[in-house]
Length: 307
Image (cartoon, rainbow, N blue to C red; front, side):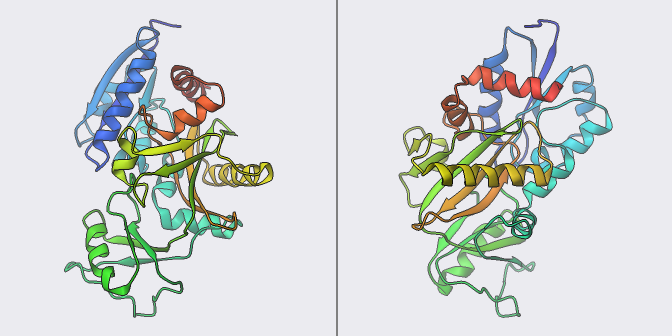
């Protein structure tokens, strides 16, 4: 416990996940206040005025989600000023934010992932799949922005007639849209802390989809941790999560999301380098199952970042 040690918690930002970031940041502040000298820094949109606010920090706890906080821009910026921060560096952050690139790396390293294609929308928002880029998999499809989190702009569609609307919805966030094979089954996630996988969490949402409401509204999802899975399967999924984390060069902590079909075959969906740390978040639930309280988890991340 060092009252002279200055931690600046960076939260807010201009991404679609601003509200989640604020909840995460306030949780982190609550966990470490009184143990360290803690300052709250709200990022509005521009990072150019940040150095003046952050230069005297011993450590920046990055509680941003999505956008410049998670895509490598902030990380490059902090590296430039030699400011220490929590979470992965610029390269790993940039790759992880790009679901397409992450899936390509997974596929070439033997980690299964649902079939997918990427389409780019034109200025008028129109897109067609018959330009040699046709999907080689059956409906239903998941349509989502390639580089957003918190299921923003995501739809599950069961026919071609729904495609244009789903693409328009995803297109509100980006012009790079992923159309992915929908894997019917269970939703599971693996947290990595340091270089160790945490117990697997199974998510049972009240809606058909683990959407924004189910993620961030208390009581809208049920969580089972550790997930009720055969031991060998648990170990295989954890090993795949850790393998991806290491392949991307992630640091300190991350969360890897999977789908598990009826035959217990698992498929990677994505990796989050700044997973939510709110009261309903998955990562703290997994840490708790591993014997770490919320404040112990936050302090572990601080120590990992200082190592």
